[in-house]
Amino acid sequence: MTAVLEQTKPLEDFLIMADPEIDSVIEEARKELGSRVVILGHHYQRDDVIKHADLTGDSYQLSVMESQTDADYIVFCGVHFMAESADILGKPHQRVILPDLGAGCSMADMASIDQVEDAWEQLRDIGVLESKVAPITYMNSTAAIKAFCGRNEGVGNEGVVCTSSNAVPLFDIYLKEFDKMFFFPDQHLGRNTGAKFGIALDKMALWNPHEELGGNTEEQLHDAKLILWRGHCSVHGRFKPWHVDKVRDELPGVQVLVHPECMREVVEISDLDGSTSFIIKTVENAPSGSMNLVNRLQDRFPDKQIRLLAPDLCMCATMYRIAPQNLAWAMDNLVNGVVVNEISVDNETKHFANVALERMISLTEKKA
Image (spheres, rainbow, N blue to C red):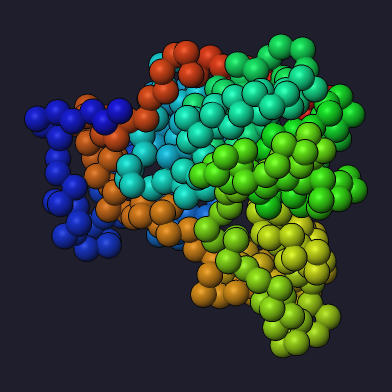
């Protein structure tokens, strides 16, 4: 939902401002609003925005941190599903703002609630759901998909949310308790995590939402241990094995770290894979001069040699839509009592999404 009032200052006024003026608008608004506002910056956010962030982290981490504040306004410099998660996990009085509504996530958009519900009914129709099947959605999904998992809370199909950090412990639990899992929307995270538990590729069925039975036979779906939604990250999915080979040729002895959203063929030949937080911590703890990752980490750890796996690929185009001008526009309007680009999840969706998130927390964090 977007709040648009007559007194709203138009974004165009900010697009023509020079960078120093934009920075000044943001910082003056922050000073005036004080503790009433918190600016969140995702790890993948552009540098000229992240420098204004009060808190930085991955999507789930940021939503948890903002919920622990008493701020009235949460300005989320990330993408749409992240702002939804902040509204789901936030306090009742907190209002979430996404500086540019065009900042979406191609992966999250690859699984609509109608498609997922249709797939679930097809599995029911062929008798797959007569066994214990758990729907699991990656955090990088819409609030409606999270709520779908929360609604599935009967014996044998308790749905849950997972992050790239806790996918392994959740799989460890669910593989022992369920006959199979339906994992969406990222096929690569599901496949790479399943492979860590020895699930053979022929026991992983790929579900194409544009084909009947996802493009599978009934036998394949009954035999599968893991059904993977055909979705992917448009950035991580572009890394190829030859990128790994090339960087090793250029830097003998280099350690290659990749995210589990990368395709299986890339993860298999890399040295380590893990969440963004895992990658950052690995770089932080590495000996001087030993690692390769991203430019911001290079600035943070000048004693280490850090390089992108493929320098022309590592940028989330939709998140990059949030520019300092968008942030300045949102902040300046807040000073004038106007909330722009508010992201608000309806109460029913919020309730069931919270069920799935709380189930994740109870299975991982509270047992850690």
